[in-house]
Length: 626
Image (tube, rainbow, N blue to C red; front, side):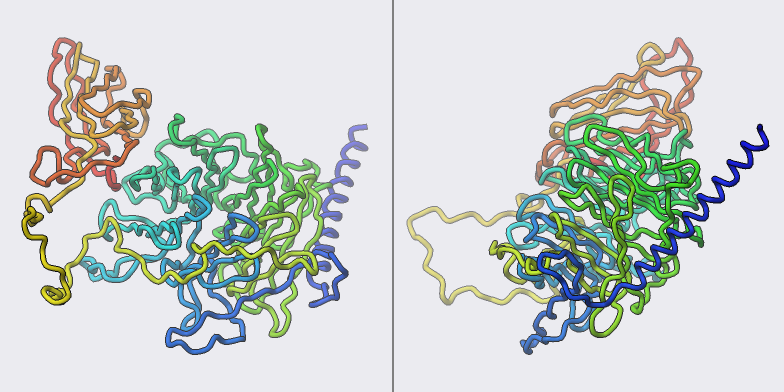
């Protein structure tokens, strides 16, 4: 009896392998044998190449009627079906790095500034958005002659048809901005940006938070996994990370958190791991790539292929989280333990994911492992359409038209049902739409009509005065002063020299009753504050995150003599813009309080309460969170 059961199990496994093999062959057959340009019936939905014409040359030469690739496109995002954006690295000399906009009738250049090598876009409102952009040359070299890095390490905020602000930070410093790969906004005053792991000896990932008045460093603590994607779902931001071999973590977790959850402003904790994500192989860094995210129709979708470090193929996994529900696996090894109902997609790398509204399905952009590492212009774009039930609805190599292939699939966006856009690695755009309905009502908002050519100076970088004095425009053409009235006083150097007041000042500490640490300080504005005590890498005591008003405040923390901490971490988050004051006034000038880690003394005797010795600062590698 047992022998017959084992025989049936072996036959079932063999049948499952054969079925998966046949499905893979069928997938390749479908993908490779589609005609390049079949005739469409009325209303039939199909992908078609819709490439915009290049912009006019700077010299005013006429616009070329021959489309070319827009260069590497880092992201495509839509506010509405007739209002979309893409960010490109450009295709010199015809296509400069910058931003392009879709108005329902076609794509045109919106800005020839704030382009990026990769780049990301985050909508904050109907006329406001952020971009992760390349830095501008001009900073000094390092002591060893290294050039400052420029790729994807600055931010631009667009509002009202202009670049409202630009943000960067000096290179080769402990708090320099790192390359960023993900951006997302819950509201215009609550946006997040994430990127590379922090350099040693820190544990965490580089992350910036815009609170409506200031851009602050707020790293994800303890986990050195690169942040790769951010998506809004159910009034939260979901943050995907790439788990790689060699990532530094403060404490190995029981479950590797491939997703984080960012709560809206004012909800605690602000950052938390998203547990219960059924991504098979996430505990083995070399097996699975990071999860690409997309949300539509009350569901958050995620998909991952093989890790680029693996050097080999792997089965693609598609996950789905319904509103107010838990995660489930749509495709992947856990769909059916026997393997009989799953199918491996022949392309092992997922490059993009887009949920199609109104269909309860999702589109995948796929590449081979080799093409993901070294994109080829001769590789055709391959997409797959998968339902929430785990069925492969269709798989296509997109018709290239005259000139052959346009590069493999790179980025996807679906603003409406039967309305999706795909960008290839060579900067060509394909549009999924019904025949005869490939254009929409024109978006005539003036904020997206003109060409933006000015990027303001970077906030966070020292500004260099001009080499030559300004032109003398005094005298001619001016109205005489209004005699008989008091003339405005010339500002003095004292009133002109202003500095941002630090969030924290007048920091004092003492031990009460031998084991209770009192930390007192002054807050410049209302802020969230939390005090952590760590023994090496482990948190041994912590206060709750508290919202405190401006003024003199204190925190009390009970310590354990058997687990006496070696470091303190003071976490702060300003809830209002910091004021400015004359540089000579009390509290102005550079922030005298470091909100990183501090070295604590040895545990004191039980009968020796009193003043703690001065803390020795230990650099956190990030600017203080104010």
